[in-house]
Figure 1: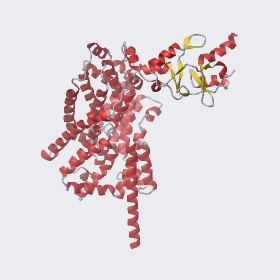
Figure 2 (figure 1 turned 90 degrees about the vertical axis):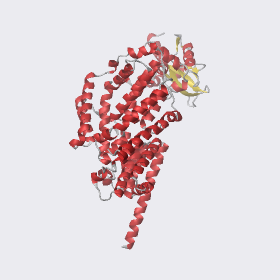
Figure 3 (figure 1 turned 60 degrees about the vertical axis):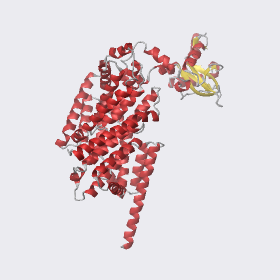
Figure 4 (figure 1 turned 180 degrees about the vertical axis):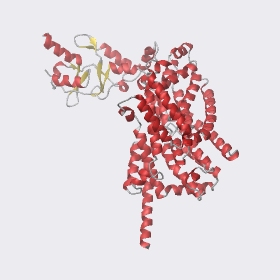
Length: 454
Length: 158
């Protein structure tokens, strides 16, 4: 008996160190960008299985240790819907229309485009939004003969802010929602007000900073006013179908909590409906255009994180966090918000949140051992911590050029257009803005949940 | 006939990678091709005057003038203005040849048959193909018109 016990402890220790090593090496590999992050994630996940740290059953079928299919199918389905909507020209229409509403005035256009980007980002993922908006932005800047770089940076920042507002706006929110079983309206009620405050301040800052920088000539404004936004619409019928499905999906999201549907169910239904309505007999292209590397990155990460959860690394960390804050909940939530912001500015916020989610659950178990299930996950004292995680992880992305995927895309687009945005140039705008926005978020969480308690 | 029988030898008709686009374009414009006296529409790019590192063609030049956003987003084709090509040309003027040239270049040896040359050019839709010795030395270039001329000579008995 004694021998067996010794052997078991040894095995546990070995698994513990192996899982931790795999996880840390993978993290370093992801940050170094020497190997593609998707390959690292799949590699790490398969090692967790091969070394029997996790069983395949646990990785594929158990929510606690394995792949969160709710997140995966929500992402895939939204990508399918967007892939079908993109060619209709709807987004270009919106962007050109916005520039015309701004009467060709460069500063007004910047403010309006930032607002449009934020709103679109709240409902589409940030990368998609920026990919759709950036080319039109380059066109408009060209027509007005102004520097496109400030516009692109402002849009990346706006998209990360806007994405914070809803469940589907940014991957961290999707993951948090799934873990804590929160619904779309929870995010609208708790995060959207914070984002609106932040957006108002952001637009004000944009106006002040760029007031003198952006000027153009009257005859160039005419170029914008002469554009006919309807020329962007390539397929009016498909546009109507897309708008219909987007409306159905939005209504579905608003009521999914009430109707007891998971968000992925709503999105999958929307994707199926739009595929059907599109009348395509060849779904190959639409499906091939799903960002499979992103999807497999998530799958790999979930399994890798599952491995470190199972061996107890995360539980140990959660105890450490509580020791640090002496169990003070306000302190914990502020620690998590600022740590998340800084961490997300330097590393991808997706692996970060994938790791933090189970950590917060473990922490909750320590704090309220008598509660379980949804009662624990949505315990009123725990909720501000989830919101702090979401706000910190999403807004932190603005800190550096690599902090969020939208930033990376914008830098890449600028380079293709022959303009470089250096790492420092992005930080010059991004870092102060990140600090300001997280500060506002901090005040918001403090006032709402710890002073007013609403 | 073999490739070496119809190729244009490389003498001064090459570009260096650090030339600006306007220098390259003017050089191509001044370099006449064969008997017709028309300007060439593509040239090899040689490093240090020896090593083949790319080809610059009129397609590359026109592509350099088109802004990236029109290529990235096909729905933006309707939003252009008169005077745009003038502005973009002015902006593209200073770009370097090495940024714009095609770098994956198929080559052919001087001793290859004309049929091999014809087959390669049609299969890969090439307008021109550099002729390179096995040692790596660049000897010449075959424009598709050189090849066509070989066929017209046979057919029309010039």
